[in-house]
Image (cartoon, rainbow, N blue to C red):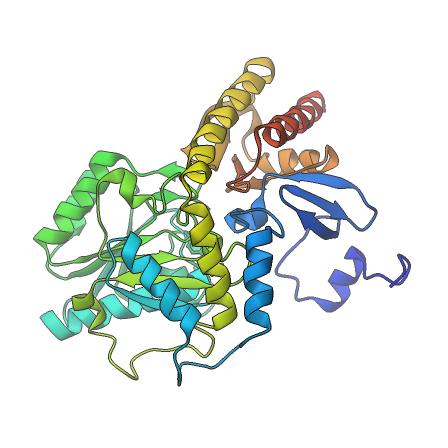
Length: 405
Ligand SMILES: *Cc1c(COP(=O)(O)O)cnc(C)c1O
């Protein structure tokens, strides 16, 4: 295609359902932490496909895994098992609390499976009255109707008719509210160890430990949604390792596939037993291409130098963003874990996170927002020191432009 025949952003509005409003540029190529658009403009990528491209764009190990598997076997369905799925499940079992794995294609689907599992487990072991699911305001668990209803943003779940029931929401990090709400009727508590879409808000260690205790006391299962925090993003394979709290069910997606759609739900053998043959399923879940790529992702991110880079770049981001803030006074706080970092805007810039994102794109930087008041950074876990330095310099130009306007 010549440049003139190439599709344009303007076409989006003619052919796509208007549920997204993508930026004006159309990226066409990526390599590591760099992306180029149709006009050949280069960008540093601090967005990582929304915390998905855990190893940047077109990482050689991932390209190799995808092409090797692509020449072997693409798909079978779950009528047959396959080698990449078995190997990946074994790897996840070997390196987490889990004893059993269920594969899906997206975070929402892994969470849907987790929610159906905890309901079925409660029914099997305690009867039909134990059905309450407790979750948190500002939590995000996906866009299927069950997961979006468990998520804590009514704007996303309302307007679609009657919602699934027995779901209650509580303030995050509020021990008293949880103590008051939880009971023997509670079937499960679902939470992100650090809320991502909700604004990069880590759970307090005392809170998360109390959640575990209260779940144990009331025979409720604890689901950690690690769709965004998992796969090395926070500096350990899964974030729960850093809280000293083990969930009963954990979901992983986003970074797990490094850009290839794949998700996993992890749990124990005892709990898994409630999803007997026929109770749940997915045509694509455990697809060989997806599992081969995810295997390569896990093999890479488990390398000590990758997790060490996450910690070093975390500090570089914190120092760099704090230095920018000293000069421009735009943030109330820089927070986060590993390479999932939020810069919360201060009172003078409330509601303007998107302005910083747009100005960043103009300065040659892709970044994210988490709500209207937080600029979010989720770059590749193998981004280099020089790339972070250059990206932060571009971000400073964006901040200068927003504050000058
Ligand atoms: C992105 C996200 C999801 C949804 O994942 P999809 O792949 O978009 O379905 C669920 N939970 C959390 C914590 C997420 O960040």
